[in-house]
Amino acid sequence: MKTLYLDCGMGAAGDMLTAALLELMPDPDAYIEKLNLLGIPDVKYTREASVKCGISGTHISVTVHGVEESSEMHDHEHSHDHDHEHSREHSHNHDHEHSHEHSHDEHDHHHDHEHSHDDDHDHHHSHTGMDGIRHIVNDHMDLPAKVKEDVLSVYSLIAEAESHVHGVPIEKIHFHEVGTMDAVADITAVCMLMNDIAPEEVIVSPVHVGSGQVKCAHGILPVPAPATAFILQGAPIYGGGIKGELCTPTGAALLKHFATRFGDMPVMNVKSIGYGMGKKDFQTANCVRVMLGETADQTETVVELSCNVDDMTAEDISFAVERLFEGGAFEVYTVPIGMKKSRPGTLIRVMCRSQKVEEMVRLIYKYTSTIGVRQTLTKRFILDRKIETLNTEYGEVRVKKSSGYGIERQKYEFEDLARIAREKGLSLAEVRKLIEDAK
Image (cartoon, rainbow, N blue to C red; front, side):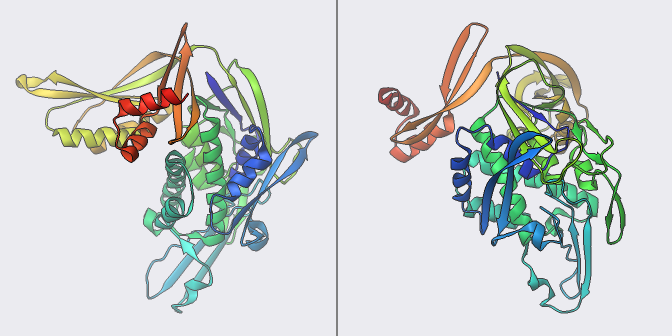
């Protein structure tokens, strides 16, 4: 099985994850050019060599309008500003810069609390909310659909955390233009790299979040920052002896989104290693290390959540299944059953990993009419899986390949076949034959 292991012994930030994953690519410089052609407004990526405690690695810097955020935002690299607008007549702004992406260089949280009755006050900087993020991702960037989904899912984790921490609805969370584009750049780069590396399993070590406290204009905040702590609920984290904020909200959200599971490094045949460096120097090498390799055929423990319903329509059940898949379940299926008083009913079964149980239970109660959910631990036998891309005259077609336990299988990605079929007015069988004949 193609396995990616992320060693977060010095935490994680978006730029450090980008740099580490970039080292796994055959031509990192060409990939930087690819990132710079994405169409992220006013953003440029730069790659440079970096050495920490004698270890050579890569550092990634992102400029917005030709300026690194650290120089414009009081040396807060990748800060995350939130403008909570309480009324149109009285602008009451809270700009929270959370060292959102700081490469572990700056541990002070700067909060600007401005009061103004001037209607033009809010126009000295451009802000955007989640709708603006969706517009940037969907309308400005040339990305595969899967990468767009990943970017928006990661940003949703951050927005949900900030909404919870600040006690305001998600739609009231606004991000400063510079901080937003910097974070979008990091998140997009990681999501693109993960899509191209295409690991079947992503294992993340326990995350070192740092320790101590950080100063802000209104007082002292604990480490990890509240948003980071919220995102990493359910994941193994620890403080250690290093004072300062090592894991940022963006780093936390990326880890939470892509992790198949959190744990120790498995027995694996390592093929390549990448080091993503921060700028600041510590006694310990300030880096994220990633290892890509193969693990043997194996089983894994998964959770089955089940509930019975007899008062939901087929449409309601279909909608619930869709929401559960979007929430992170890797399998959802239904079975017709008989219930009390000879009523026909439906068994809804959700399969997920242990770290997703709480979220899945919440979604089951939200989208179904059940009043009880059962949990069962089970094991599944896993084939080694990988995705390859065929370049055809009709465009790229992904091929899912599975092997293990003495068998090999392959299957064309349905969405790619369906796209060609729609464009050419063909059946799926005809498209498959065209691809086979073109090999």
